[in-house]
Each structure stands twice: as C-alpha cells, then as structure tokens.
Image 1 (tube, rainbow, N blue to C red):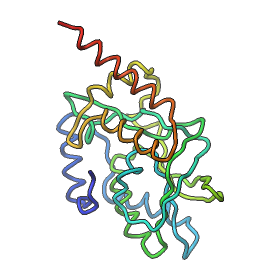
Image 2 (image 1 turned 30 degrees about the vertical axis):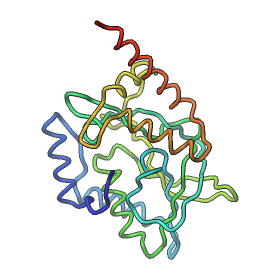
Image 3 (image 1 turned 90 degrees about the vertical axis):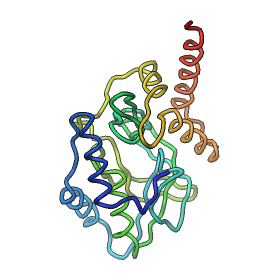
Image 4 (image 1 turned 135 degrees about the vertical axis):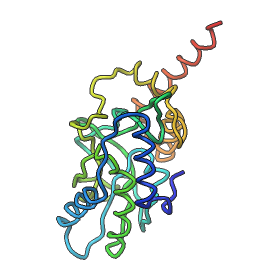
Length: 226
C-alpha cells in the first residue's frame, strides 16, 4: 500500500535514483512537477473543490484525503496496460506494465472529491504519486456520476513518453503481467486488485477479465513444462 506520509521530495528522489540504477529513466524535476501542477490548478474555478477520476490503484489506495467518493464513467478514454513499469510493479529483471487511460472507448471508475481548502495539500500528494516521470498528462474531463455530470481531473497516457507501449497484443500483455514485479509487488496482484474493486462496484471490465484468463493459461502451460 502507498502511504501518504511517504510522498515527500526525499522519497521521490530515492525512487528516481532506484529507477535509474536499472536503466534510463525520464523524470520531472521537483520544479517541473510543481510547475505542471500549478499550471493545472490555475485553470480551476476559485473557491470550488476538485473531483479526481480513478481507474486503477486509485480505486483502493488513493493516498490523498477526500470527502466524497462516487461511481463514475469517463468517455473518450479506456483503461489499458500501456505503461512500462520501471519501478513499483516492475524492475530490470522482471519488467512490468501499469494501467493508463488511453484514447478511445469509455471507462468506469470512481470519482473522489477534494474539498476546496485541501486542494493545495492533496494535489501535491497526487502529483508526487502520479507525475514523477511525466508519463501522464493532467486533463480536465467530464465524468458521469449516478445523478449528474461533473468536470474534474484525471491523468491520461502521454503517448510521446518513452515508456508508452502502443502495440502490445493481449498475449504479450498477459506475459508481462504474469512475471512483472517490483518493490510494490507483482503486476498480477495489481490486475487482480483492480478487478476485485471494480466488481465491488458491479463493473465488469472485459479487457481485464481477458487478461486474467490469459494469465491462468500461462500458469497452466508452465505447469506442464518438466
């Protein structure tokens, strides 16, 4: 689990150093990350809170403080394993993949509400959580809640980032998820946690279930090898 107390500049520096020991790793400086955050915040209406759309680990481990949480649907982006994991759920020996929002389709998730007076402190945590390397773009999007449509923040895949995986098929994706592992755990646990929390919301994500089936097939095949 990611704990909010660990989101400090010192810890971010340690993570970047760890990633670079395993190979080239593009990362924001603290100044670049804060500039990116404040540029986004400068476009928010004054005195109002902020909704944040979560689609992966934010579903069960947001780490920031929020005052409301509701099921939400986002159009124009889909959940996909298209981000190479150099740290966290991957390593040089066992590279992995992380979920991102890629173009096309739609996505069910959760919307978290950050109160206006907490936006500064909680988005600082959020940017250290999501924007260490600049692999995402912070976007203002429309989210459909159970009883209304609102505007808020989500992080979508930066397709120009060197860790973007554009053309890996389902089989190749499942192979990486079956073996990927880093200091935060395995990619398959990440997949299973995402599925479990979506199912709590009565959301069936066909793509994620297909990957689970493929991983079971890979495991069964491995058992047959003498």
